[in-house]
Every structure is written in structure tokens, then in C-alpha cells.
Amino acid sequence: MKAFYGVYGASGCGRGIMPLLRVELAGTDIKLVFIDDAPIFDRVNGHEVWTFDRFVEASAGMGAVALAIADTRIRSMLDQRCTQAGVRIIGTRAVNIVVMDDVEIGPGALLSPFVTLTSNIRIGRCFHANLYSYVEHDCVIGDFVTFAPGVRCNGNVRIGDLAYIGSGAALFSSPVVDAIGE
Image 1 (tube, one colour):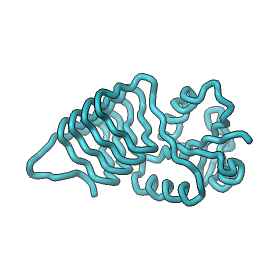
Image 2 (tube, one colour):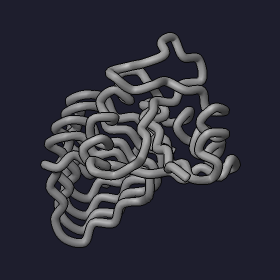
Image 3 (cartoon, one colour):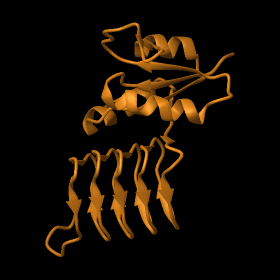
Image 4 (cartoon, helix red, strand yellow):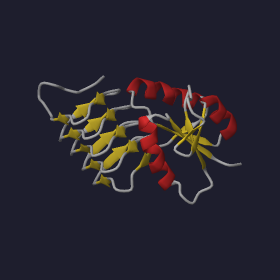
């Protein structure tokens, strides 16, 4: 049986992740589709757009999904939905990211081009690091955190679950603020 991989979200975030997954899976027999709960188009950038129910039915236990939804709460909800349906959550990363020493990254991370993760970092489930973002030494990042493009997360920063960090933000450790997010 053929395996199916989906990028959940056919909007901007998903269209930025599909090429990364396509490069990662080049040379395999895995069918790549977009998944959207309210599809507007049948195809986006050369890939079919399916509903989640169609994906679950077609993949019959052989499916995996990258959750390319920037909204942290929706991404968390979709993670639960996929898990309950027996669909595995996958991550992908651009070929030019930099990962240094002792970096732990939870499942489902989506790492866009030019992302840098330095040393001694802990990152939770379904993290998104958009273009040109970095995480410096000794940071701890929770589950379902989104970094918009160009986030600069400097050393010793704690970010809780479900945080969305906007484009160009610069984060520094602080003795006053224990953690950002939940």
C-alpha cells in the first residue's frame, strides 16, 4: 500500500512547508497532498488538496502529517485530532538550517530555511521556526510554539506552551519574567 504524507494547511504556512517536505522525500514513493478542512481549490502549487477525512480514508494507517498551521491553539487541536485518527505527526526542516550541540527537538517541528539552533536547547512538540529565526544557548521552548520570520531568541529564555512570537521579535532572558506563554 502506498504511503501518504500531508501538509495540514494549504495557506501561506503550508505553502512554505510543502517544498521542504518534497525535498526531504525526493526519490520515495510517498504521495504528498495538502490537507484543508474547507478547501477552496482542488490543487495548490501542483499538489492535490484533500479534506482530513479523505486523507484518513486514503492513507488507511499509512499516513503522516506535518501541521503547517501558524495558530498555536489550532495546531494543538489538530495534533489531538490526528493522534485520535491514528495519523502520525511528522516534522521537516530545510537543508540549510544549523543545529549545534545538545539540541533536543520534539516531534512535529517545522524548521524553515536559514534557522539556527545553537547549543543546549530543549524544544517541545510541533515547534515552528520561520525564515531567519534563531534560538541561542540554554533556551527551553514549550509545545506548539510559533516563531514568525526573523525571531531572535537569545540565551537562557523560557517560552511556555502555545506562545506565538511575532516577526522580528528579540527575546532576552530576564530575572523578572520567568517564562513567555502558558
